[in-house]
Image (cartoon, rainbow, N blue to C red; front, side, top):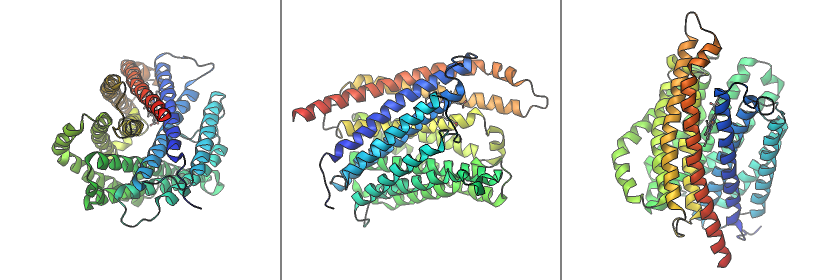
Length: 450
Ligand code: HEM
């Protein structure tokens, strides 16, 4: 079939716009969850925490998945200079995703579950998502064409799309009795799959940020450099083997834990390099700050540093024993999904909607203020979760434990800070999203005029 260009570039924008919508409703559920920490029985009769948590987590995870897919599809077309191989397949993927995602969210509201943590929906919903993702893999690979002499970001995208499919299927091995019947094996496979799945969507996102930075600097050689490929392989190695810290508390084989601990520590090399390049990257950042989307990249850079530092501390088995299952884990997850994933995705959306700065940025002041508000409140939000986690860990190791309800009461001031900073965070991000939406409508109307 001959490649077709017609309208192909508009399809990924639907992914991005739906993703932004999910981000906003996801944050709204997050704030509801925060209130449920504070007010006992808040909305319990029709939207209890058991429903609000999966509504929040699934909405924001699907924002990341749609945002990463839409950004990679757009940037891949910019890279090849051609449209998608089969635009109709991208449409079909979009429809399958949107119908499944909204059906999943409705099913939660009606109390229909049956899945596992993070994917708490009925496992039947995994089927259309798998089919949609297979369409994505086929279309993506066919649209890229030859693999010869491709820059690192193409390899990152390909790794992301293929590994996501693999790890998503792996996270459903529990439906087969062979895996489900042995609880240790079952949990080992489950947590391994989740750890690697995050690595897979990170590959898609980091590929897009590499593409964006290459585009901004106008220097293609960075994306072909040995250092870029060395970092890519370290990321790939971690994606495959560093999930061990998820299972330190399980009585599984020691060698698995030792190997994964050593692999986790290779991330120190990445951290070291970020610190080494910090000064020069600041100098570089100042050069590009006038380009509005770049501000989000700079913010994400800071969160890479903070998240990696926390992750490395949490990977030390002697510390992991205490932090496991506390709010330190939630701090790690939210710090990464907001500070790194969401900030970078918003940068791509800003870049895509303003066609890389070719179209003037509308509502720039609103965008910058929103970003400042979101970044500052996220730091307080993140620290409050770590403090809550440390206090809970201390409670867990007390010789004579006080009652759980008493411990939660002592954490109340921390949760007040958490919820208030969460509200400010949501406000800041909504300002950013609104300004992006204004950009979309203005670019869209100029498109119609031209
Ligand atoms: C971009 C925005 C956000 C993203 C990507 C995000 C992501 C996440 C993720 C992935 C989790 C699961 C954490 C885990 O199980 O380790 C989570 C839990 C949670 N989030 Fe968010 N979040 C966001 C914003 C917010 C906001 C604004 C609030 C408001 C207070 C909030 C409140 C919560 C609560 C209460 C939980 C449940 C923690 C628990 O299980 O006790 N989130 N979030």
